[in-house]
Amino acid sequence: MIDLFITAFIDLRLLDIIDILLVAVLLFELYNLLKGTVAINIFIGILAIFLLWQFVSALQMELLSKILGAFFSVGFIALIVIFQPEIRRFLLALGTPAIIRKKSRRFLFWRFSLKNINLLDVDTIIVACQRLADTHTGALIIITKQNELSQYLETGEIIDAKVSSPLIENIFFKNSPLHDGAIIISGNQIRAAGCVLPVSNNNELPKRLGLRHRAGIGITEYSDSIAIIISEQTGRIAYAKEGKIKLRVPPAQLKDFLEAEFSQEDESNEGAEENTDD
Image (cartoon, rainbow, N blue to C red; front, side):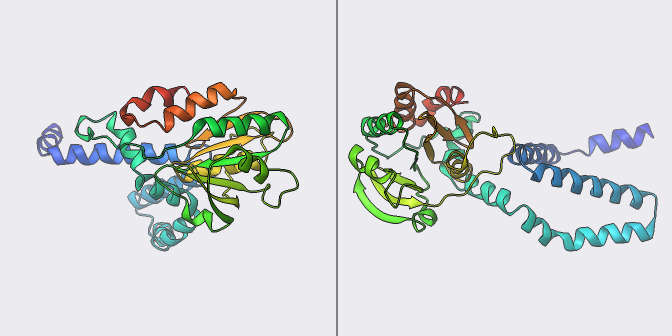
């Protein structure tokens, strides 16, 4: 028995170790992706059925083993349907350069920088947010990075105008037909207004958050954009990034955050700012 164990250990190749580490990393990232959503309960249930299948197969319980095996053989398509939002979020994150910037701080062989090309007029946005907050005017402002959110631009009215405080205030004026949706800003252009955004399904969010806040969080779960939310009830400012929200943000703190996110400096200096957002 010991000889078999030693032989199996000797036959262990470097590629086998890499294979195991990659699977471990994949499972860890999958857990982080599903954490805080209903999908994590479904995933645990599927994992329990899989372990049961392996157990009955080892006991040579052929009938039950065939039933569970048939479930997994035809269940792949069902899994795609069930986990469609999570798969979409994973593929969007994988195809966004932001994930490379994040990993470049961990791995030495990814030491190339990707610079942000957005020339955002931060002061203009801060002035607009301050005025909207003072008048308790609800607002949802989305600022894009690499992902320009083309699919969501089509849900609103195309504007393509330079960012200005009066324009933002007029869009979110309570009698404006576009005030219920979000505006999307790319570069220093207001691309569209009245846009419909996906709402976050994160069950860990505070129950008091309304649809405007959940939509702001939702769009940052699916993209690398930044969402600024102004509460109509309290007049307080919040911002969301990567599915996480920061509430009760003073204008000065919001300005520092936006300047750090949209500065022209090397993105490798961004790590310290991300740690203070949560």
